[in-house]
Length: 191
Length: 114
Image (tube, rainbow over all chains, first blue to last red; front, side, top):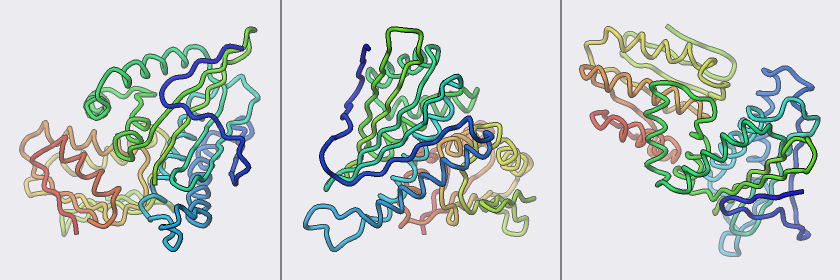
């Protein structure tokens, strides 16, 4: 098994702490029904954060700020939408979203299988995001999309970085056989 | 002119000359957003008066939705004749950020945060 890491990837912690994990099997439902589960799961995660996030001692009396609840829903939904768009359709693996609450940050891990064509596409995008100013790239993409749409333009990922100051990382797990490649996208959000 | 579902509505009100967006927009890609973009562009097409885009009651917008609004803004910017006003709530941070991004794409856009 070969592992490739890009960006600020933080591994799923094995610490004894509260977490939430949702597994979706897109082949079980129609695309329309599957798509609906993205928003519902994202809403559920955001409600979970609002209920259980305690935060640093100075924050204990204050629940999570409402804008952070929106940020959590936005990020969870975008990650699930991407997973559904780029999931390897031949794979039987669940799309998993894992979510952990730390006292000063929230960490998402979304894992799914991806075919080699989409891996190349994502790696090209990663080269861009690491070599250019993300804000400039975000607006360049908006302008380019206005002329012609491209599936996987990275607008969702760029908005997480530019609008929510999120840190992103990617892990590709490539097995030696012909098995699909497994991608984990990590997002860390300071609150 | 109105598109309405259980989750969202996009309505053109002729009297106030406003396009009012409400609810949660979580559609899948530009294909599902096409009717909304068509409504925006149709309303803008023969407009002589300033047009207002009201997103105050918009609760959620995914990145494909952001893409739809930016396409419309770039289209209006190209025409150079239509004055566009966008209205959101100053207390809702995502609306402020989103509308400021639209204004960066079209500096002539009038931004009203209530």
